[in-house]
Length: 399
Image 1 (cartoon, rainbow, N blue to C red):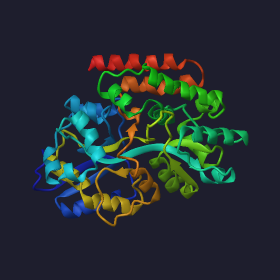
Image 2: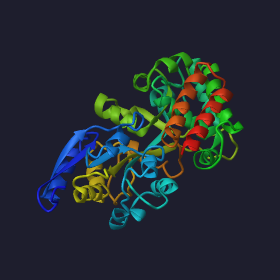
Image 3: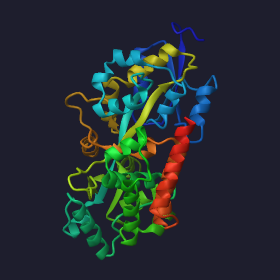
């Protein structure tokens, strides 16, 4: 092991962002014995890359990973990353993190924290302002108003809801919003953390709602099965449909990379058909920093986690314009997030679940397959939800 009182090299692996060079420079300035080497990569859970790295005895010292109970939660459960409660205490994170973040962490960490959450992904309906204005439409407050918008847009020959499920991602986001609207937060809480079932009537109704959207021409089932999420987003940004379901990260990234004018798009929460049920976004922990238990520089690794947990780091990230998640940490007064992040941030604390990041890997695969099977009529909603439940039961039985 390197002498951490002398020169130390800290290996950091994460996706490159505009603020990362400045963040590394500031860390090195404050830790003159440490040189950071950065790798632009985000290893994946689904192909086992993360687990292989952490079991290898080598690899980077700290990693930024996709977060949530189905990902980092499994690393904690299997003892693959060390506890960092001391950092939570030193940075007073139980006070400084948003309540939503602590609620999610406590659901699977049981007070033994092993990650520094960077941001939150929030999914809601985005719409083309020009199309709405041309048709005299306003953001819907009720399910009936939402269906009216779909019908009114369809009658003009424009596709009401742009969908691209071929690579699974948007199928998960969109179906999650429909499940939230139709079945509600409590039903999914019971499915994820208790003994609730996917094949219960409320969730089957959600599947039927997706099927109905295809039957009514609100979603083009053939297009949804043929397009991937990037293609459907491009179609939406080009005005080839009135609405879609996305996370705020996708619009901000499109503005940065593809020069999309995101001021042309507004957002609203999908209303519920259930009397008295308030509309809600769906959300999940986006990314988290974790420490490799095999780090050759454990002190420097912990110092890096303290740095990315700090108010100064989050402020630097936001001011760079390159941070596209809702910050997990509460912000100091006067720090602006920008209109798109502000809108997403306002909907975090009442948000339901994005099941894509809450379900175990085997169940996630079935979850992704369900909307594809429903929109192509390969399976009935009953069959699709029963297959998710079967996969979830197997995953829970396997531990």
